[in-house]
Amino acid sequence: MVTEVRTDAEAVEQSVFTLMEQMEQAEETSDPAIEGVGTVIQKPSTESPMAAMISEISGPGWVILHNTMTHEAVKVNKWNMQDALKKVHNDPSHPEFMGKPLFSAKSTGKQQFGQFQCHLYAGTGGKKCEVCSNVHPPHPDYEMCMTWGMKTCLGAHIPNAYEVTRHMEKRHKTEWGAIKAYKDDERDKMWEARRVEEVKEQQALMKILVSRATLESGEDAPKRGRPAKQTEE
Image (cartoon, rainbow, N blue to C red):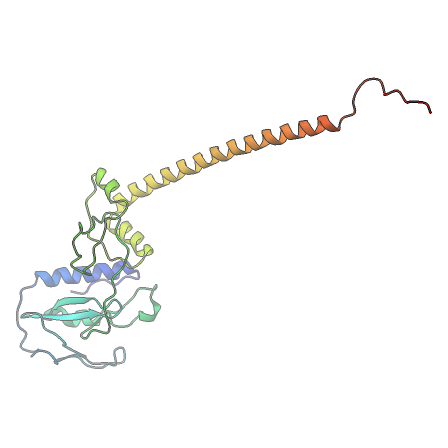
């Protein structure tokens, strides 16, 4: 089965998740065509000049592939391995990886974990994360979202703020609409309160200026009445 390729990061993430779900549902079986570690599973080509070899086998019928950009390790059923190795990066936000293989049979570096969270992420509850071994607090919006009856999400390692927005738009469209509407309303209230405060400050300043101008005009005005009598020498 060939997963449809789209031109955004969410499509790549979704295709990987779909692939992993299909692999988890597959029955574990041994492939007589693949003997074990060191077996060449993809010969060199124009698109991929380096041959791909199995670097590790996890149980019968499974191999470990590595994302060439994030270095994330993914367990792949051997029957789906060839299709997985044909996938390429198509995220335009990372042009340096465009068209290059999405997976490699050998790790190309240390896995990097995103530091951004889904707005519905509950945190680790003081325990270490099973993925990165760090302790994560809940997202600042989590408690508010729970009072609205929303469900939690496990998205704790999103690469950047843009991907968080994309994640919310794709995975939690209704919840994201409610969060945005609430924040837009709060922002409008804040700006209105600030505008009212500025008007009050301007009115107070105007009163001071008017009072000062009145006082100065009174001091400079000529005194009324008969002129002072001049003394003859």
